[in-house]
Length: 374
Image (cartoon, rainbow, N blue to C red; front, side, top):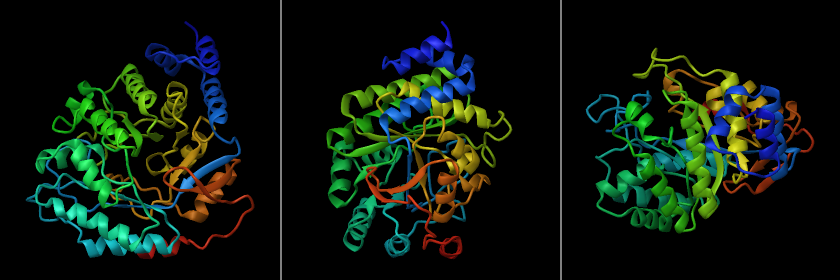
């Protein structure tokens, strides 16, 4: 086995195995790995274009009963600093997003046993009625499974009722590493790998689009990372419902896992981005993760197989709870993408191009406006 032969196999259109992927991660020269991934990226996407979306993450509650060891955001129901946002508060936040040209909202919260089912339905209906142009890309598989168990419904019933109320697509949060050995170490009370995949399959059967994620840098082996890629590409083979894949590294600060392992490096990130493009040959879009990795690493990822720069993210609370805070705005995103050698293009949730910035324009969205809204 040699890395050149495996890369040639991937470039010829043949799918590489888990073991071959691990071999590439461990042995392929970084530049060769990146070049192969970029070639595959360019075969699936306009080589000159990098997309982004203007979105807002709204964490509607911080109450959660799952006790994930890697989460610094959640609070137990008895904690003094818990919250659940009112419908009016959420609508205000969505209105601010729309006023600044945003098109996507992500509702994501803890698994809160104090919330009634009607809260979610009424919230989605209110957003849909008030802001019909906004794509509601919300509720991870972890939340969907919780809804089904807690409100005594099937996964399909939950998805149908949320869809009918206005839910458009599902984010891939909660995937971590889709290997139960790892999940038992870091989140033993959370959805299983099979459960996560089952929610995504049910969504696909209903014709809903979804994204897939991976949080790496726990206690997983490289083979287990490749296994994660493999189960995702198998599900994509079956339904083609995933619009994109987004990997990011574990941020252990201020969590139960702090000090138990070394943080992943930028090189680790670039290898993971490249391998995601090479392994998951049926995913059109790979997203660069500036929220956790920083803007410089995200720029490099655009040359290692990524074609999307993610969201402007008017609001982000989960990662920032660890103390890791990278900040950007539309003007900065345009600069970073152009500086990396690409044409920035605003997209919607489904990767339809809404606006191309072929020439530099000073956008109306200013950093100081966003800081006021925060």
